[in-house]
Image (cartoon, rainbow, N blue to C red):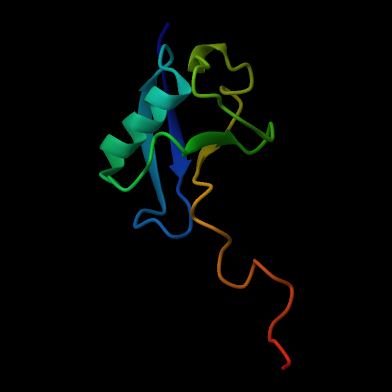
Length: 101
């Protein structure tokens, strides 16, 4: 089926900001997260909770979804690795800047 080369943008609290990775289009979403984990040497990536997100299409790649079947994948400039456990960036969580007691 072929390969694709994409820039992967990591969550704010990971030691890597972004990395360009070549992936086989026959991989599932979960296998692609495993490849990102190995190639970036970020072994704290949990393949069970992390997922690849398509920012232009505003949707995630499912764990069992084949990369070659994702129609909007070729048009995406980059993919985001999303970790639901990373939380918001400092200053982006709450709109309150201080608490008055």
